[in-house]
Length: 454
Image (cartoon, rainbow, N blue to C red):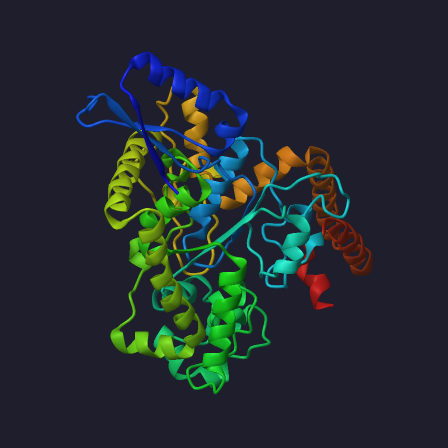
């Protein structure tokens, strides 16, 4: 409740009142001050003093469910930068993996430092996982803020089809329409990585994704899924309103505008984009019926949160401020003023990972940045996900990182020996497999074809 009181309009009295309020523990913890006047003048020798509940403190215990093809890599970069600049601890994947053993349901021991108990407190969890709240809660503090981002399933399906063209469901199809018209022979739910082809949002949130518009229990499963998301997550963002989402996130986390500014990460070149036709869109809505209903529900609740927390007019003002800040940073940080194709990225450490038929763009750092602090901030803004994850792992677990570098070097040496014609394939494969097992990584790429064939 807002308490309004009037006090005499005397400067000494006002300053004394403010000093007492802000320096009294009981009041200071539970109140803030807003001294308002009309046209900066005392009206009738009174001040309006407004007291409101305790001011918002920045949140640092955060769980972000990183969904697929939803601009989640951009949000990951925001979280990485925020945490690194404040020496926060990330719940990173075990053995320097890039994901939390997706697509398996998340388990607490997937996080480096949990089993060994080397980490006393984790602040931020944000790598790809298949969500399971009970296991996440074993790792993260009880007061963690849970949020995620979703996307219109029509646009998302087009992106998934291009990016994951090599999965079994898409491999033999000529186009997205071809897949949607001939799902039966191509989509086998148990085939590895085929979750990307069907209700991928629902799958990421931990639900059974094998449901279509014709399923008898679609409504029941939709209601259960929405109820679970609303129970487990305080905020669901929408890709189609990314800037508004960042402002809503800023207010929800009590962060600043600088904390949520970003450049697009893991984003496709425009020439590889092909918006689906209306007829294709309808097929996608039926095939990914669960995703579509989840999206429609949270699209509506998103704007309800905007109205409640910020207001439509105010969010427009803050979105404009965010865009101005982003444009300013682009001039300072970027050599080319924006994203470029991967072949044009000069530094290897800034080259984005390429996968599927998509052309993932990156950035070139402005070579004329002189201030070391500015250069560091700019580098963090454009560092691709995989390289940034590696860097944070090296910082948090330097001894483990060094051990893994030595083990990988041993694999490379063993692989070179395996290429010798006289080297026994059995010895070769055993040597590589043992070293790979110790790292938790496959080593099949190092085994010679002659050994694989035998």
